[in-house]
Image 1 (cartoon, rainbow, N blue to C red):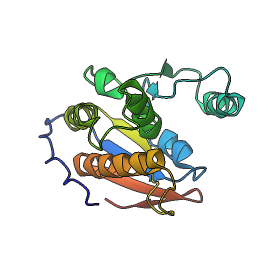
Image 2 (image 1 turned 45 degrees about the vertical axis):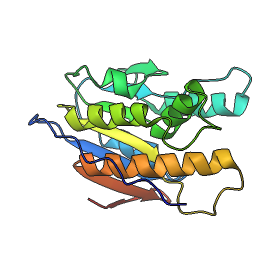
Image 3 (image 1 turned 90 degrees about the horizontal axis):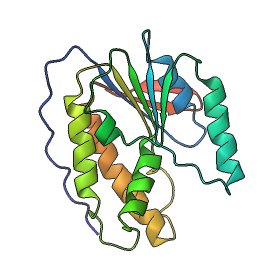
Image 4 (image 1 turned 180 degrees about the vertical axis):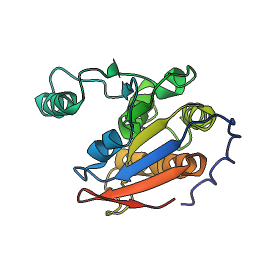
Length: 188
C-alpha cells in the first residue's frame, strides 16, 4: 500500500523563532534532550497526554516528567498544540509529545477503523501552526518506523500517520534531532 505524498509545506512567517523537532524511540532520552533545548525565559510546556486514572503505569510516566520540569514552567496539560500555537508566547514553547496528541486525535475522530487520512484536517492544522509559529518552539515526537511492521491495523495506522506527520513537521522545522540511547544527532 503506497503512502500519500506529504502535503506541500506551509509558508513560514519571518519571526525570530527557531523551530526544533526532536525524534526518538521509547526511552531514548528525547524528552530530556528537548527540555535542555528550550533555553531561558518563561517556558510554556504543552503536555499532550490525557491521563487515564485507571492506568497507573502511564500516571507514573507523567509523574516522572513532571518531577523533572522546573517549577517555574507554565504547564498546559492535555493541550492541543494546533490550537495553543496560534497564540504567541514571550518565551520558549515545548510540546511533548506529538505521538500522544496524534493518539488523542485518532480517538476523538473515532478514526482507528477509518481509512488513512481521516485525521488530515487535524494534522494540517498542526503543521500550519508549527510552520507559522513566530517564537522559539521545540517539539518532541516518537520515531516508530525502525521496527517491525505492527501486527494490528491500529498499530499500522498509527505508524503510518505519525511517519507522515513527522516528515511534514521536519520540513517546516529549522532543526531536527534524532535521539538514540540518550545521544542526540542533528539531522537538519
